[in-house]
Image (cartoon, rainbow, N blue to C red; front, side, top):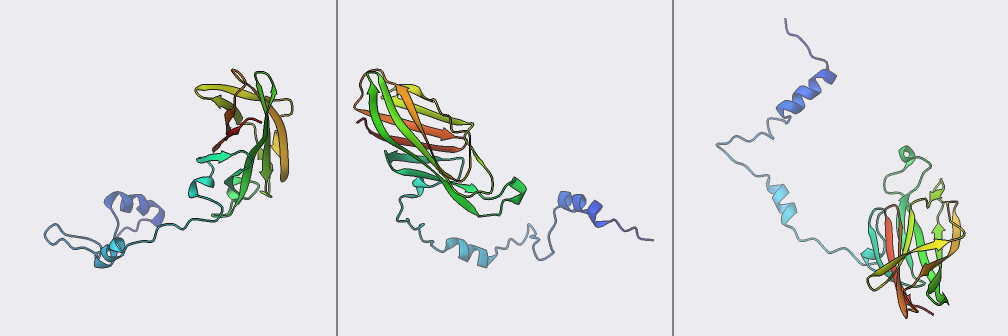
Length: 191
């Protein structure tokens, strides 16, 4: 009598043995190549199209760098829509946009600026608990501070005034904004 193995128990055995149909098997004596696969692989492909809003570096998935921007320009990072990870729909995202502007010398040895975070309707709050903002003057870097931390943000536009110590009265500054996987640099003159 033949014994039947339930499908659930047979799966690990099939995976360990290597699954495939007899048509997919290749014997060592007669190598074959699927010509349709090589034809598709050898066809030239068009380069990705550039968008009017900027280079591909300007907008990236969360977890990458957004490149470098001028003061007043927005760095956009796509974030999934949904209250919980299991509710996220594949490929459905909205952009969270960071902007640095109003960069001025507030006092000798201090640079002040406004950080703006535009949060779209994500179906949840957007956290800034990992927000790290730094000012760089050449090789010298200082953390930015604020009296009004952003916290968890609802959909809308949120701003906070920040300051960085400066080694002297600088002509320009690089402001680096990192929040989780979102990272962008903003560079420009100090007004």
